[in-house]
Length: 271
Image (cartoon, rainbow, N blue to C red):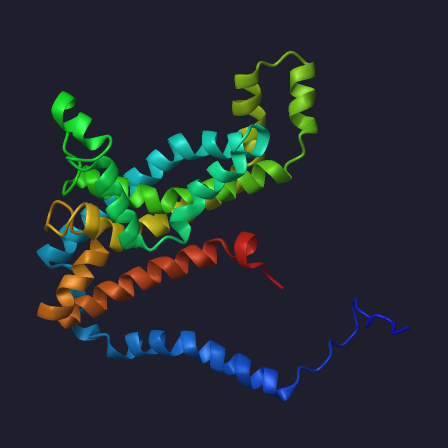
């Protein structure tokens, strides 16, 4: 019977086989080389001027407005949804949860088409909104917020749900025993205990919304000042102003990197 390899402080880990190291190095290079190429091709002498241009500033303001609004909407609806998945048992919960996280793996363009069929002027809900309330969502700033919420909210839901499932429910039970109402327990006990998960989920949601492209261009279009967010501006600038596209891409890269560094303890782990 083979004994397990010893582990613990002072025990040297087994040496990795050379083929594995070569494959690992190639895999790392696959991700690193495009980033190095972006850094090397960035027109640093023109970067500040590109970032101060009216087109870039307009796209940046719209991106921040839409992504922050999408995060706020996700918090309002996503936290109760995560709590329901974590605490309530009902028929079809697994199916509903799968439908909720589906946008994480669904091609964004398909998500945009689905949004058009639901909230477009001839959609399931959109026709009623247009005829009764006079609200038209496609190709508007509100449409961009909806598209970003659709693809980003699952990140918040699964993160908060994981935090709720891992917390010690005895604190909630103790609060109820002392006479606290359900709402008081939720606001004064549950939310503070899952605050790290809530913050992590909100940041991931915001970062995903900030970088959304496919669903936005399909459902909201690409109109400067109205629906043209930074990813869409990068796509348009590739044809007319490649240097601006590189600078914008670098800016989005730095934002994504900052998010990963901020969440490394929770998502990536630290040695």
